[in-house]
Image (cartoon, rainbow, N blue to C red; front, side):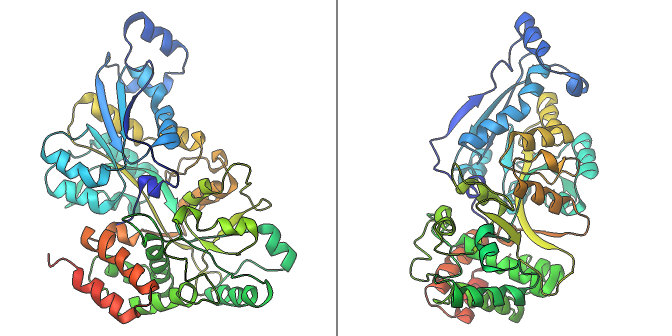
Length: 443
């Protein structure tokens, strides 16, 4: 599985805390006064609940948590639902245990489909209402819906999203050197050779360190290559173990990524594993490297005063396909909003969080995107995020969820991560994929 801390949150994480919605639980004259300050038109159909409480938990913390809370604050004020949110780094590790003990929140924002499946298969989740399912049918592609449909039962709507496979670069450096954005994987290799020969610095930079999840950025490279070299059908067979992890096509993907990640002429192989992933691309700003493979969410890492845009300090292009002009193929991730118990207030919150209104509000708060097809891309907080929404909304895009998120935890968030570390430390590809294959659960 992938490491999220809001998909690997990219900023230091404070201790978890419960945050209530200011004024959301008020009743009587105060509530009426609060509601008068907002447009309650979009929320009339939900009804009013006179201070009923709904608890929500997930991996989203700090500034991102504030933005999330702002996204439902008008809904809470207008309906009278007192929404209390708890963001914690331990959500993924503890939520099943909390559910088993009857201590789960009313709603969970779950970052991996594999964890959704685990919770559903253990009987911890309530099926989503017909209204939530109707929203998902209207506003998301079938690809997204399937990730929260377990044994033909639908459990929750997608929320936020990210697109993987971006390659970050300096537009000014490209312009000064006459480098073109590559349109094929072969052109990417040629560009890398050119930078190595002419620039005076290594072409690539990266960071794999992420605490217990060290190695996960390398899994993203492998997933991108499996999808591009062999297409979505093989990708699906791989993540569901219809073909073994050591299939020759997966070996080919490892070797293709290794041409960059294991080549000391292209990347600093000595510091690769010890460099925190949050710092992996920052050398671009100092002119010490030119290319960094990381998802759309990496934007928040560049720091204050760094402009992200086609004419800015940094920008990004999607890792190209094998052949120019083909359909865009991307990997990505997101969250699913599921319920551990159900009543009218919980259903209302789940409905709102599956709506086009909520998705638009959250995107307008900044720092993220949604795959909801009703979102206006122009309201995104940067050109990169606007581009990301357009990619997600494009019917020609082939989207596949992060492979490690879909694999069993023993593989996706264990042997695959560890295998990447060993592989980058000198293990050969065959030994790596054989070990990961042998770790796959028997059932």
